[in-house]
Image 1 (cartoon, rainbow, N blue to C red):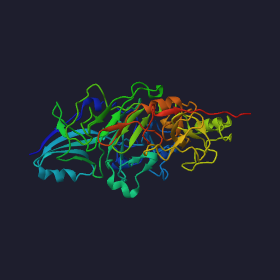
Image 2: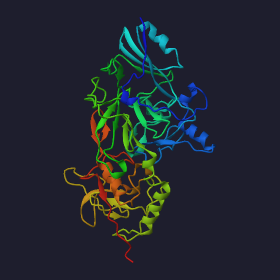
Image 3: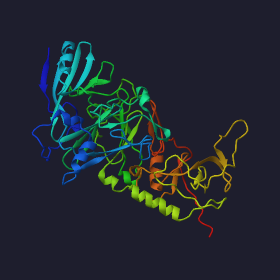
Image 4: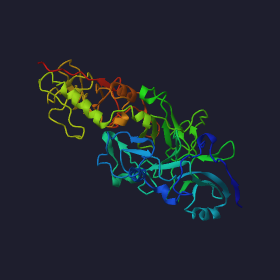
Length: 461
């Protein structure tokens, strides 16, 4: 037996309060191809027009410092700007079907219709059909390289080494991890939902997936490894205190975290919080963490040109090694991983900046200490001795302050405000662990604060 009913909203009202669009579409209806068009392609198409499209914001993957190890290519990149599409491709809940198993395959054959399928048992499923929404744009994020995915992300390991092509099978990131819905009318509110539609325009929650009926009799559910979001407390550019990590459901509702990442029992509904992204919102896909920056927030961050000016200004001060008296200089922002002979090095336990030298190794009796442990000739403190690298991803900065602090133990340099903020943010790791990490390379932070103030010596002349 099939029961059908038209729904104003299948999910919670808070996740579907979409303003009517004031944008005039180029045709009376959205074509199916618009759902798979890339935001980059849309942006390029708009560049030839007189008016550039509105920008919703940018997604930045933590741990890559401005560029993937093998370079940004197409939809696989370290950051992606979302622009208003030439034609709306958003969808909204429309009709709900309570069906028996023989009808499931028939429902899936309609590839022109978006739908979410909830398998309750072998003999009972609920399918929610979605219709076109001319007031919103949809962008999908996931591991899949299929055309319906706008932003392809892979697992991030420390030092910005993402998973290679052959490693994608072991990835903990879902092929269709999440979707972002942007209102096409100011103020361009942006909301996030767990799970993305596949090539058949379907989201399938199997019998073992966490799913349930809501208090108003509708359906909702969670993906296997979940989509976690942390909202900043206060403005991100003001250096906020860390927020609380929450889990976002398929319908965009907010829940407390499960006991473990893939547990079938959901957390408690958090009714006073929403899935609307703010400047500085963090999105964790169980393998990669993304930062959302709004256009207003990005205007407060340094551009590459400004970062280059800060680099040149720092080098113009002619910092010197206090032992060798040779002048130190930060290498070009384009230079990655190859240490320059003039590059400054730091003892991360004290902050004294030196040139490179190959002495001062210390290894405690009984096996304590590591091969990279050195004794600072200035203060005699023992600890890691690493080269300093400027943080090149401007979107990770909170301000355009001078590069005076470095993360420990990796040595990435940024402003004090930026270092203080990221050192306080616990990022998800594994099934239920959290640890602060350098936003530029993903290395876990160590030491009392996770960062150190750099102590430069000026020229003796």
